[in-house]
Image (cartoon, rainbow, N blue to C red; front, side, top):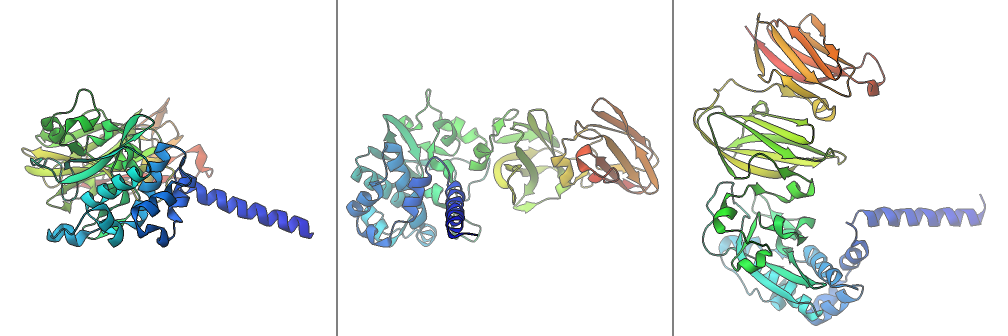
Length: 423
């Protein structure tokens, strides 16, 4: 291979790496973010020096706000010791910059001063936020517990929360640095779900939301909006029921969910929830064993994204009676969530032995569905995209197994659901 070709290939490799690395930073701020992250420590000696340095690549008001947001989210840490002890040090912008840490008031002050040094119009907003240790259904206390910012970009006010955009406080009361894009230029109709300004002007909503309405709003987390979800069935955070709840969410086909029932910070068995896609909706069904207060917690992620699901929302569920300790849905396997199946019946996870049960599914992507129970193997009948079969179960387990043409091997079936059969 000649030298020229080696050089060209090497340059191509370097360019490809650069493209991949830039793609890892959220567009359209790739260059701005990279510049902020590469800022040397020496430029943070004072606010004028830092502002001058950060402003260099920024051509618009939004880019100026962004470079501040990204620099702060990387270099300023939340002061958990101060927050939990109540011993709050000086939260002026120069003091926060010098220490490299602060609580919300300090974050907001530093964002304001850096913005003004760049010629931006910035204000600090005080209000109540559904933050650390807030639970769905909790009372929204009078007064303020948080501070964030509004910045004018191209004549329009934008909402920014650098504190929450920088990371979160975990269950060990430690700050975890993790960029959250949701809190940069957050649309007002989204911000109002967890931020309630003392001055209703800074809701940037017409008409403004009342404090009573804010209290009732579902406890939504950034993942809810990032995954394109919408509330279809329950708009209040508190649901009262005898024993069951069915929540319907609008969701793009690129979004996956699962849900859990939580009581007194303990996650209850998986079989108390059942999630499936029904057309343009993701439907969350939940059972509650006995009377009491519960959380119905929903997690979401893009289907194409590997790794864990993220917390999307909570409802508080007040249960009057409950379904009993033994009730539950069938156990879901991953193939069910990925295969486009819709269970029509039965939703009861425990079946009586010796009694005929009719199983019905819709499955647009499947060509065969089998049911296994001990020595029994039953192939479902198919009409259009609906599959049905009847089983008189024997004690043990019932598995629903699906074959899709995409699987290739005609003998390759995937277990998608599991029922238990009791004597």
